[in-house]
Image (tube, rainbow, N blue to C red):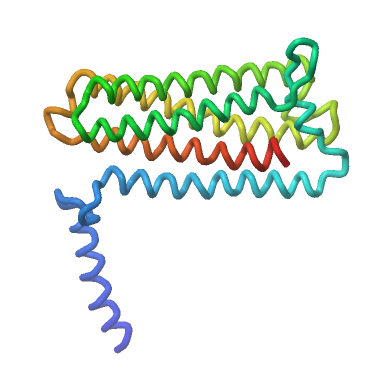
Length: 227
């Protein structure tokens, strides 16, 4: 009897949910569907990066060989002196600065200022490309000069290479996708694509993704480079 009542209650409820999602309307009232989907995607991505960082910390804590000193590994020789983490600091500055330009782009987007929105989005993409260029230099230095590989590390614990390339590589992939997204949205803004619909939410959605990428880097910087 109870099961029959449960079916009578649950079945209509499921049908109503399916109808809401398939209907031509916003499922979340007062929330753009694109922003809702982006938040769901970012939540799932948060779990992935959390697993990566948790796995890295577990591997590092259980390593039998000494873990390389990141201040020495990622030092850059300038004027005959090794300056620790200077390249990483510049990369971090570039990403943090890009968050500011992206926030301004979203603001001007909702003001329907195409010129400033496009310029700020292109500047944000330029910051992203700068970050990727410096990361490519960092990888090449580590691979060709230091001899670090995902499966080996001449400076100590072999897990260092696997953790480094996995975490920074996955984040670099996100930055690359973000730069491509910014360039696509900026080109549409410049052509007046969103003026026709009066909806500049695509700029804000791209901003959500970009701010997430920047925030993740802060945690990578803290846990991998500074610890």
